[in-house]
Amino acid sequence: MDAILTTSEVTRRRFIRTTLAGGIGLAAVGVRSSAQAAQTSLAAESGTFKIGGDLTVNRLGFGAMRITGDGIWGWPADRENALKVLRRAVALGVNLIDTADSYGPEVSELLIAQALHPYPPGLVIATKGGLTRPGPGQWVPNGRPEYLKKCVDGSLKRLKLDRIDLYQLHRIDPHVPAEESLGALKEMQDAGKIRHLGLSEVSPEQIERAGKIVPIVTAQNRYNAADREWDKTLKYCETEKLAFMPWSPVGGKGGLHNDSAIEQIAKRHGVSVYQVAIAWLLQRSPVMLPIPGTSSIAHLEENVAAAKLKVSADEMASLTA
Ligand SMILES: NC(=O)c1ccc[n+]([C@@H]2O[C@H](COP(=O)([O-])OP(=O)(O)OC[C@H]3O[C@@H](n4cnc5c(N)ncnc54)[C@H](OP(=O)(O)O)[C@@H]3O)[C@@H](O)[C@H]2O)c1
Image (cartoon, rainbow, N blue to C red; front, side, top):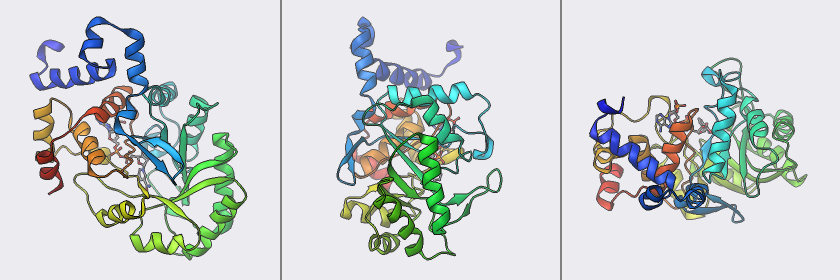
């Protein structure tokens, strides 16, 4: 099989292999313990961020939506593999995992607890509530206070936690005043069930309005090299020192393959377009916490290895333009 690989594919695979091994030198002499240590801290190469000013995480996280069944519905075909992906993410130094009660629904949270509980110190599980699932691929907001309180209790139980480090309102429900939804989440925070609160798909104005009810520490909006609709929210997060957690960071299910700028840079560095997309995000802003999702261990390793990839200022500019 290797005989028919292109030169750039060979270079790309070598980048991942040597990065996981902790550098060419270590791989060559087979220093196993050093290589393992290098892997444990691989995600740390992305730098750290303090969520809410007191919750330190490595900036490159993991999104646990894709470990569920098709249409983000039900159990995955290979449950063992999903558990392995989660454990491998943590072994590679990822200590921010994003999930939601609606992934499955419930399945992603249950898999996280099964794979990782009792949780290693410092692991932050960020979950979300406020979207219901009538069926595969369907998402309907429900921001009613009583419903959200039940969501929080359900997530606590499934994740086997006493307190959720970061709870994000998945969507502001257009049929419920944001003050009512956030008032309910504030009650849960006051009761000690939530440490920090975040929002998703929000403008700076919506964050400001929410901030009058309860402190907001993160915004999770769709954002990647090809989709910059939420640049304003990113800027706002930078100014206010909130974390910005881009979803679809590598372009979602379709990827970013039609982006010629990314493809050229990937070719030049001998890496994949996914890795360039992640490196671009990490270099774009110090408040950026990408949460690429995958159901594949090979893709996970490739994505985490991107924590080490540096693209030049010119390349950044060509992607950002
Ligand atoms: N707040 C919200 O409204 C919202 C909405 C959507 C998602 N999210 C969160 O954001 C996370 C990421 O979003 P996302 O999953 O939509 O987008 P994404 O991370 O940009 O893309 C995931 C898709 O890309 C593929 N992929 C990932 N790495 C790859 C690689 N190295 N090579 C080839 N294919 C690769 C995955 O397929 P494979 O499984 O085959 O690798 C999957 O289909 C989710 O897990 C979830 O936590 C939040």
